[in-house]
Length: 250
Image (cartoon, rainbow, N blue to C red; front, side, top):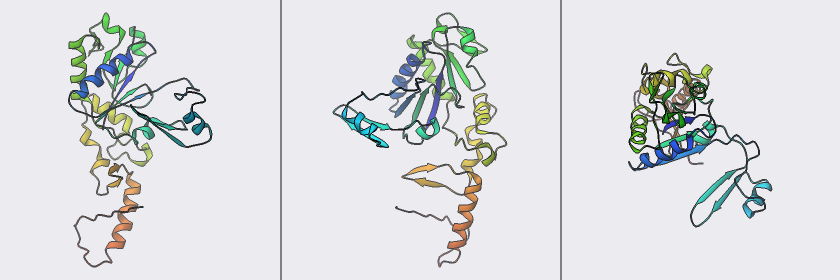
């Protein structure tokens, strides 16, 4: 799943960028998911005193609303971005907000100062209200998502530059490539590295749960490999160099 982030202050044009980008990514028959980060601490989408609200307040960890036009999943807890992303199956994920999480980003702002507050080495280009008065900023294009030709250019740049989500394991648990995941994102955006340079993806051990591949840190990979090899070496049919597959239905 490829992930891009749209960041900036409130009322700078972030949602318009997300809307136009979703429309264009969908033209390619891609499955697109979005996340909107809301800063209001006590925000609740579900209406008070609705039946589903009563379910949630009774202590249900997950409440599912099934209606004629949509299905809503309400988790009764806050979740970090990585935990949310692990629950999503899509070709593209567009994240509005979660400014501190290191993803390739599009910065929106009304002024240069607002852009500067979010601009970093992971920035692909600039958009938002400032695009009405500027065409470039810090050697990057400034694109107006409300102008069709420029919105098309936004989509083309995202398709060209955005890559699948890195595993984002703790720095102390990996560092196989010599960089943290955050620094690797910066290096890929800057053109100094490629997504394929993430070495955790090139290991011998792969784990899938429900058909979805789970990234495992090198230390845990080694434990799994050593223990499985120790068991299967004692079995008839063991051959060195052959692929071993283990499936567990629980």
